[in-house]
Length: 178
Image 1 (cartoon, rainbow, N blue to C red):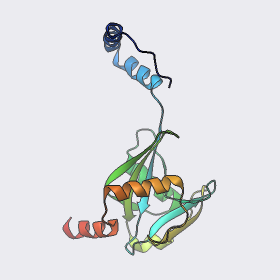
Image 2 (image 1 turned 120 degrees about the vertical axis):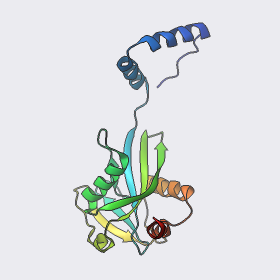
Image 3 (image 1 turned 90 degrees about the vertical axis):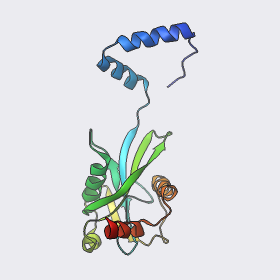
Image 4 (image 1 turned 90 degrees about the horizontal axis):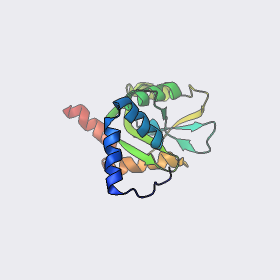
């Protein structure tokens, strides 16, 4: 959105007073109209008990990525993360801890990134493409990841900055003390 020219302080205050008198719904529409739009997605870094990480290869992308997708209107991000993993690979997951958020101003995208584990680790090997957009699903050792999509690298870096402890150990700790 183009930057508006400087407005004299007296006029600025008068416009803010006028804005404050508008009905709430009108104010919200004006703010949304004048604000940049971002898409919001939820992605999961799913790790099973042996430390392998779940990655998907999408039909329209060249590199490996994380399962996830856009939130539906008014859908909580954790619910979207669970739904997307189950839709894409047929695996039920449990998010662990608080997510991290990655904001990409260029493409105007916000990703809510969750650490997660399979609800039943025995079912983890049954993960397979369940969506037309996913052509391959594979579990990779953490230190042997393939070439990754930019968004996946950003998500993994954000999680690494947030917590240096491997989340398989974190999940074990939560089970013992939680």
